[in-house]
Length: 499
Image 1 (tube, rainbow, N blue to C red):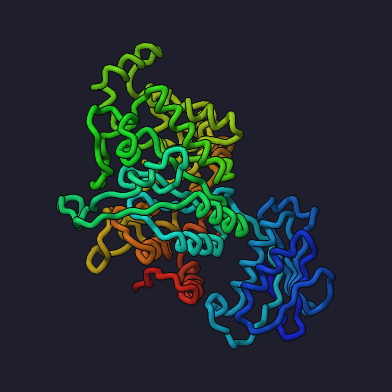
Image 2 (cartoon, rainbow, N blue to C red):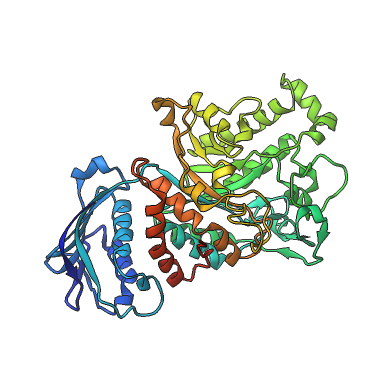
């Protein structure tokens, strides 16, 4: 960034210049600036006193999400190789204007942009945020708002965790009981897990396929890709409650009402594999994402060890143990997704028993899984719990809402580097990026999600976008104060900074 003396002021004659195919982004910018009270018409022909959006093939060095922004006496010009770069340039322009513009009311302030030249591009291609809607269902409207919050931070991946032991949230038309039965539990745990108390109140909900298609379209317009997660073979009690033949027991079970790791997991029958492929078929029709998450974590093998059918299959397939059985299970999904032109991503337990050929690993139990995967030539998304689990406490427990445990202050998030020191430069190329996790055992509503996510997700967004060199936590804090005013104007219920 280079600054020079002077400012460009928006007035009633300022226009937005957005030739096709950028006219939609021109309208997006106009909507972003409606609080100015200025007309800001969108037109295709360039002129002075304007905000100009332009695609520029010479900017290939900035990649598909990079941009340049110049503010001079004639106006503001945002150039990029691809429309995504224009979108991120618009976000930076918004940050130069009053925070009140992020709210619903007219700003009634002078709107001027300092003369500046910016060249900008992200460090990582996967800049993500995860949200678990299985433990606690979140209203559809909040998912749209959350997409806006991610896009504001130049985050481009929304990992939507749709199925759990405690609730199945995605409509699958071929299997209606997944939502009519699996979408509801009779009660939830009250207080902390160790208290072993329940509230006696039914909880549930699900998203129709139309709901999710609307969300996908809304997110795409903000350059956010939604990665759906369908958990297997563990975290599957809600599905087994709906269709008991998917499980390993001879008796029916209910949707899960306890947190933690549960022993009820899918069996390995051919019919169960076919069931999950059918579920994935409908999922793929909703989500165009290249990556599809299949979970793969926390799958206890107790029931498999006790099942004559599973043991017979292990023997028939020539497998060594239950870990190789899980690897075989994941390999079926990997091959299936590959045949559909998609890529499987799973939590780092999918490394156990051998990693499926095309799999991408999401490393959550520290960085070790990510290091192992990258060294073996597999792509990795870093999600280590010690730096990216935003369901952990962010301050002294006194005065904070009940959380699962752990301690992750803002400074630790900001200090995280997604490239482990153990990787060579070539191996590090397999690190696609990182993301922040929101697990919702103890997070019951949108206000609590935002309280736990922000401003920690703001810190992670800078980790994922900005160069490693030059990071300074005190400088970040000084800029964060202004940024929190933007979030306040948007109605984001973030945790206030404390001395």
